Each structure stands twice: as C-alpha cells, then as structure tokens.
Image (cartoon, rainbow, N blue to C red; front, side, top):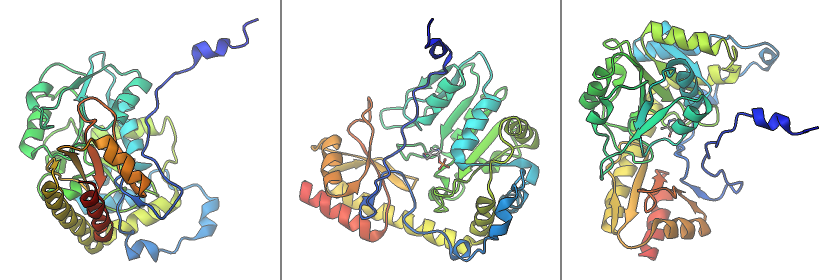
Length: 352
Ligand code: PMP
C-alpha cells in the first residue's frame, strides 16, 4: 500500500521569505522597514480591559473602521480592515483576481505578489521596470485579469506620480487595480490614489500601520475603495475567518489614528533623515534611487552589494539584500534614528 499518497494532493507553494528578525536586540536593524520610533503615547496609555479578552471581538471591527473612515473622509462601508496589509492584500487577490487572463505587476516589486498568485492559482505576467526602475504605464494597457503595484514601489522606493497611476486605472476599467500604499505616508503630499477612489469603482487602495504608524508588531492593514468593492471583500473574509481583528489591535489601532500630531512628527523626522542620508551616501559613491519611502535603495559604484551586506552584518548592522537579477548589486536600507544612521555612515566611510 502507498502510505504517502496524500502527498500527491498537497497544495505546494514556494513561500514568501520575510526579512530576518535577529534575536539580539542590540543590532542596528534596518532590514524590514520598521519605524525606529515607538508608537504614540496615546497607544501606550491605552487601558486594555483584560476581562474582555474572554469574549470574541467585534467581527466588523467597527470602532477601527469608523475611526479610519472619519480620518480619510470616506464612509465606513468603504473601509476593509485586516491583519496587516498582507492579510488585506491576500484577501484582495482571492476576491478580485479570478480571471483566466493574467494579472499584471512589475518584475521588481513586493515579492509576496507572485506567492499569492501561485497560492491561489492566479495566472500572472510581470512587466519590466525601466533601467532606472520606473513603471511604464503603457505596459499596463493590454488585456489582463487585474493589476497590482506598490506606490512607492518596493524595494526600489520609487514613486509613480498620481497622474500616471490614474492612467493605469483608466486603462483597466474592467478589472480591479490595487495600489499598495504601504509607504505612501513618506511620499510628498498629494501622491496618494485615495483621492481617486470616488472617481473609479475599480480602484482599491491598501494601507498599513506597520511603517508610518510604527505598529508592525500589532498587524493592522486596511483597504479603501467604493462600497461594492469592499462588500465583495467582506463576503470573502466572512467565508474564511470572521474574527481577524483582535481586541488589542482594534483598541490600539484607534488610539494611533487619533494621535495625528505624533504621526506627522515621526513621519517628518524619517523623511528628513532620509534626505540627509541620501546626500551623504551619494558623496560616498553610492547610486541612490530617489526615495519616497522609509527606506532607500542603493548600489555602490565599486563595492558589490553582497559584500557590503555581509560586512555590515558582521558589525551588527542589518540591511536587506535580494540576490535577484537586475537588483543584486543593490541594498535596501531602512531609515533608522539619526544615531543609527550616523553609525551606518561611519561604517560606509570605513568601507570605501
Ligand atoms: N506591501 C508592501 C509593498 C510591503 O513592503 C509590505 C511589508 N513587507 C507589506 C505590503 C506588508 O506589510 P504589513 O503586512 O506589515 O502591513
């Protein structure tokens, strides 16, 4: 008897590899685009009623949904929340990408997209970024089953101007276009596709609390679109897991959104550190892709990225390195505190 017959029926997937989470807390950790500043005081001072943990949370996470709706000037029916934007994106793939035609996304992008496509058996085709890592709008004008891209893109950090984002949405009115705005709060004001949501019923904008809100450890993400789009996602969510948002996430998530001053202050600090580090790195011989995110993507003119990555790691400085065609000479460096970035620049100076 064949005792391993079950193996023929396994859904085999090549999983996404998240950045390393070193146990040692004394390292300079610039490899997963976390925020170097803690969450707001409002979050720290929240009183969690532990007795309530015996009860299921509100399956609709209404407090958080209403808070986000108010913040973004949309209706609560236009907001979908999930366990980090990965959960929201995974749910969106499952909900909207059901065509026999391939979905389209850039060749260099968030490496989770092909993983979800494989998991859900969605055909996909990648579109090459230009030599300087720009998205070409005309690549997204052919017939397809849906479109997704991050803006700013990851790991390149490059922003696609809003008028070009709109052209992609306009060219794809019969499919859903997902704009993954994980890093948009670090981009110039007016860059977000949220301003287009009322105009286009095929646009879904996805956001996260993990970067600009400094809450990667809590896992909160959300999507905003027109009511019909969100209702379709809700139906899929309630067919899979009703209670995605736990009570602490709902409570702390609301508190974070309510402290807009702290949010703006920390985002502003990260942007000015980014500009300073970019300038210094260029002077040290790095090619730095213009960044609209909380990380920079850079290659040195003479020293291979893999070598810099390895030597930095030995010194307790963690960057992200992708051994992947076209970008294997680049490092993705998260913006840390000024103190951390001084240490990074000292390390670079020693190296070159
Ligand atoms: N989208 C992009 C482009 C990202 O880089 C990340 C971070 N890995 C995510 C989505 C997911 O972030 P989270 O699940 O923490 O919200």
